Length: 137
Length: 137
DNA sequence: CTTTCTGCAAACGATTTGCAGCAGC
DNA sequence: GCTGCTGCAAATCGTTTGCAGAAAG
Image (tube, rainbow over all chains, first blue to last red):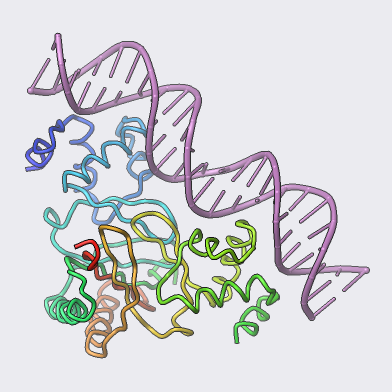
């Protein structure tokens, strides 16, 4: 599956890339580059950056950038399912949170209305719930 | 009003800060530092960065960081009213879009449910509608 | 064999900071 | 007059890139 998406871009599924995908799949939240490197996967920092770019281009991985600067990566929603993020404004913690049916319907309606009035074609959305996590409270 | 919030932090309302707020107030979307400097307001780059940090700390300005790297600033919602962002994934354009009553209610309900199940105290949210703008389509 | 990957170290670029003089209060 | 503000130039730090050798197909 991942191999296929890479193949379509004449990119190879190497050991480094496999490990990156595994690490992201094991996490229940987006990871920063240093978190990824911190897992001692034994790949050079430059390779992490380069491979994440490749995986992003292949639609396997999604890049997200948060307020505390520091790019994070997660698997795309095709692989994990649609979800939103819970963000702690105190420590920067990010956690995945499933999207409810009702909420999705409301957002879709709002998006349709906005599309009509602005001429944008709306493809998807991002919702962050920002607050203070249990540990920081 | 702005002066008061600055005063509470023993910060002064200088000419540079006034101009920054005016520029942001005149825009109907978040601006990048270079867009701000591009308006030839005659303040040093370092002063722009420093003052925006001060204004952010005083609750006058809000910093947002988008996918195309490049920090942007806008006035806080206390000054502009609550709104969401329309983001063009092709050219990076960002536009403000008002939040509808119905949508806000749905988000509030989802937030309450999430707060209950995770222990987070949720203070606010951010919603980005991502798509392709009229010009890029 | 040819093309893509890799690690290393150097380059880059947006943002931050030290400093010495200027300006609010 | 003390404290905060300014511009300048230098420092920082995450990220990107050039290169020469290793690995995939």
